Image 1 (cartoon, one colour):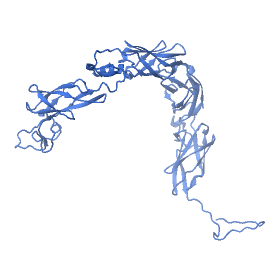
Image 2 (cartoon, one colour):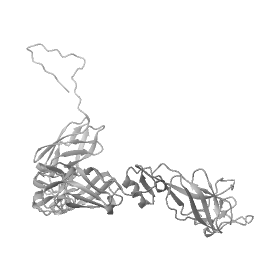
Image 3 (cartoon, rainbow, N blue to C red):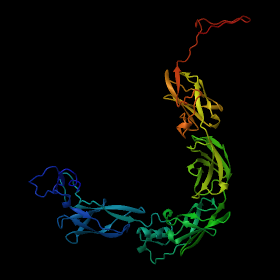
Image 4 (tube, rainbow, N blue to C red):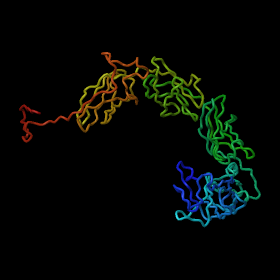
Length: 493
């Protein structure tokens, strides 16, 4: 089909299984349209157990009736395709094996005893390959619920003699499994408002999510079917608790019984006490620490700034959260709300809020000196305003390197120049609190920091590199002699 479905005019030689660019009158059986190609139309085949003989039926179009065909599964042996009528063939007694939980075989029809000068294996076109699934009940089914739960995938397995086997091998069949066992729950703490995604791991935790119920004490925990792994793992969303409490987790499975966790889950009421520092630049990047109680509970924690932006969390413990403040476009230096949100609950409780003030961005007015030796290490003094809001400074020298700087006062920063391989004039840019210094406020062009002469502050500064100084005495060969009590005069050029 690929030969006759391209945009160029081509011809298909059935006898030699070749795609031709021109028509050969000596070959009367050339095909000109993809609609006339021999085609295999697959039929639906249910999954079959490993080692069990199965029959597969297929429908064929545009093929010579009773042509000898073989069923090819990509492995030995091949099976003869038996014609049932003018358009239907059957592969009988096919036995496929796998030691995996499930394996897909692709069924193709091969022209038996047919070969061309170009290829030995000639197959019937199959635009939608027929897939045959073979499963092994003994692989990946370590308990009763896991074994019986495979029924939803079409795997007819049963639990007998303490192992998972094909149902035909289990006589008599008893489909009641032992009571569930809980091995682990996570997390162990969550907010009293609920909403925590609680993961329960264990054994025999049911075959289907609809047959399982979970409780924390007497508070229901809603099972999430999309997060369910048959028998071994459940995820549920905790309900709201009326007060702080600590209880075990209980799993109820229909017809199997109840399992209780050894670990306990605690409902807690978190609170926020303070934030430090409580102010920073509007460009963002300030690292703040929020202090409080029970700040690392639940399955999801966010720090919201002014109810819209997020403070990027870098570390959290029971009593503190560290995060990096986002920038703001607000021009006014009004306090904004910083709130810790747990799960999907928006900030409503004042116990979880504090305030933070965005202040005018630091400004850099000049650097001095503007020359450095090639070997680097020269102290570059940076002058400006608002450096008390700066926690970290990096000086980037274009195409040379970067160095970390030190804040000495609200108006002074010092940096050591990096080493350069050659004399050159280059550009310097600063990064304050992890944010590149642009010389302008992110809020609006009307709030640009200006120097005393009214010119806007620059984003880049010039720095020149010159040769290292060389020192030598008037006569390098002559030793310097000094007698005690006499003055010493040493001339250095």
